[in-house]
Each structure stands twice: as C-alpha cells, then as structure tokens.
Image 1 (cartoon, rainbow, N blue to C red):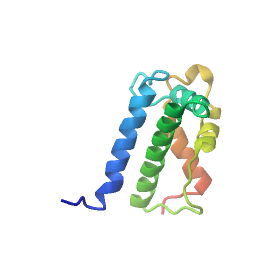
Image 2: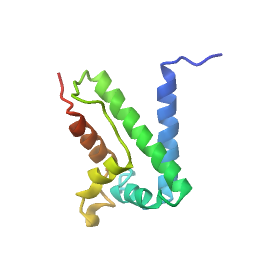
Image 3: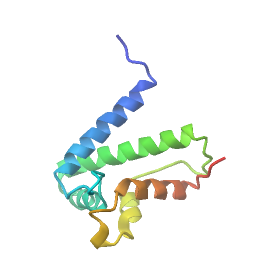
Amino acid sequence: MPQCPAKRPIAFLVFATALATAGLAMAAPTTSRGLISVDQVAEMLEKAPTDRTAQQVLTAYLAGVGEAASAVVTMGNAACQKPLSLNAANAGQALKGTASDRGAETPATPLIVSDMLHRAGCRRQ
C-alpha cells in the first residue's frame, strides 16, 4: 500500500531526528532536560571533516532541523525575504557566541533555528 506523499517528509523528519539523537547521544552529553546541546553539535562539527559517522549524524541532524523549521514557517504563514538555508558553517556560526561553560546546558536547536529565520528575514504576517 503506497504511503501518502504528505506523510513522507514527516516520516523522514522522524527518522532523521532519531538518527541524529542516537548518534549525538554517543557524543558530548545532552542537556539535563535531554535536549541536543551546543557541545554535542560542536563536537560533531569538529569531527565531521574526518569522521564519516560524525558527518552522517551531523547531516541528519541539520536536515531534521531545517525540515522542521521550514514546516513551522510554512504552517505559521510567515513571510521570509530569502529562502531558508542551513549548512554546517551556518550552524557553527549560530553556536559560536555560546559561552563554552554553558554549552552542555544550552540547547543547540533553538539557536540554529533562530539564526536561520534571521538570515532569511522571516517575519510573522
């Protein structure tokens, strides 16, 4: 039985998030609330150029973040001046200002999404 096309992106998002969470769980610790920390993403960003597993986990995580942000913008009828975009360099820049002593307790995803929305010039209508 074929799957509904509208459910495919959601299924991918769930898979990518699960993969990212599983892989990142082996890296630096999550926050005390169980969220993906700045330290986890920073570790993956550092390892990705030479570690194939880290590269795959980082790619899955960033794809999940990008897909989710895009869905929220679309469903929220936000207007953006430019298309949303995300890559490892953008993610690194978004996390750069986080103090290293707070990186283990600071969730990475909201910082990355906020940066995406800012770079695209998104606003609520």
